[in-house]
Length: 421
Image 1 (cartoon, rainbow, N blue to C red):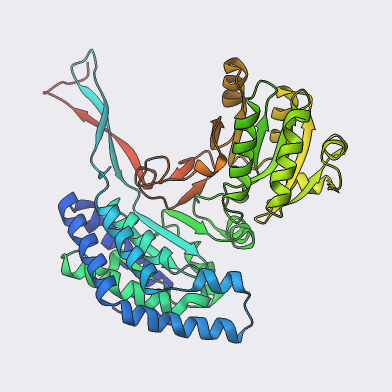
Image 2: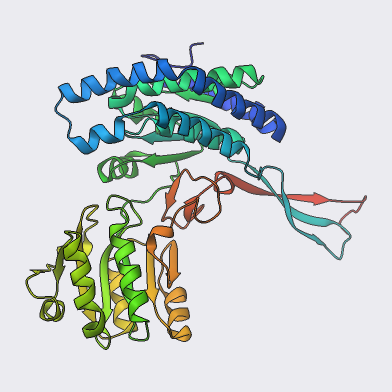
């Protein structure tokens, strides 16, 4: 059957993916790596077709009046196509988690009990705007032994189709089933509605996109999800912090990139150190044209900034805007994060190890940091090599989700003829 459907049965995609997942789970590391290398080669050789398809999507986006930021996310260049191919090759170079055995223990009965990493099965990934996600997601799923059904945004329909053709051609060259990577090439929202309820075919759903998309899927999906909704990330400057370090970390956490989910959105400063650090932080933010919104204590130290509202502390700005609050100390900082945070990434800047360790224990977020910028909350920076997204859920994985996060574990028992008495 054709693996890219314009219209037709979404369930047919699911059935094909389930069969392909069984075949892919049997593939050894060498076979999967051959497929990834072939996929990268096909992306390079198909660069002209990918860019031509992207041109169609860009023309349509401009016709619809999409803003500059949207156009930027959608745009592919020869350099970006090459980066896409290199990204697939990098996944080939990562350790394969499938089949790894851990926690092997001999029991008094004589049996040995261990855990083995295995693929999850079929993963549906729903994403927006960025066409490179098609190649990234396919590569991660193939390496982890999972079949995937990809549904990109309608604005990138032609780009995603061209990239998916290269991916499937690579699978075919390596002798793996092309149905291991399928693209739901339909702009129909009803098709997504059907996909996210196919519990018999899809094991995990991964949404990558804006808050509206993720909220919709959280409401309607019957399939477990790996997701995060908001990135309301905090940096707390304790009064034991080194002032120079505190300024440097606050600056980087906010201004290194504005539109990412691990960017600091709220700065908390202990009242004992606030007069030493807030004026300098205010100067840095002003120089970089970051709008500051603070409480009364902050505004007395950084005159001329806007009064922060209650809603500001709940807000993920994704822009050159920051909320600031002066707190009494560690306890009040932890309470603030518990109330206003999104359990994504939060950091403490402190010289006092006991306070820092309390922060690490008590702040309930997927990444908690001591004397480091929140911008490090990333699969590449954590040594995962690549990630499919960030999870703020507690099950089945939390934080940046790399290859190991796309597998699960089963018990294996190694016996020598033992019987239970």
